[in-house]
Length: 221
Image (tube, rainbow, N blue to C red; front, side, top):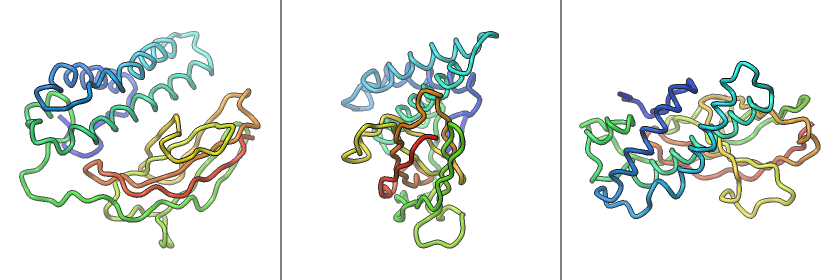
């Protein structure tokens, strides 16, 4: 049973089991929790995509494309689960501790700890490029060191390879989280020369997000 804010397991095999359990339990109970949106709307497709990609990755003959597909579909599924949890479950009074245990998410302490969003933004201080890789070094705005602010648990990086600049962060197709700088994205050979757009925000210990940074861009080398 997780008892920290980082409730999603890191090993892929454990994550797959966790995601299926989270989806199935939420699907069976969302109506009784008075949630208007079924998890099927946002989680079913990413879950199916990751399940397929992970099966291909587990093949002894898997290739680089299988590795990248597994990584991309995991990121999409993790983002979908975190978004659903943050929007509908995290502060829902109808979700009991028993439910949270079954979901394998954070069980809130009985102590009354204020739930506040981070108030500052991450800044991309340096963007490094290497063949088929872009590395983002980030720190808190106004800070001279690399540590996260006290009200942040991790940094969310939303990004996409897009032909035109996005209108806002809602138009990014991918999202990752990282607990420390730097963060590296790896691309396919046929993605070289495309333009990466991305922005960042801090996520607090209870899953509440802070404000987004400006939108940055770089060319995939």
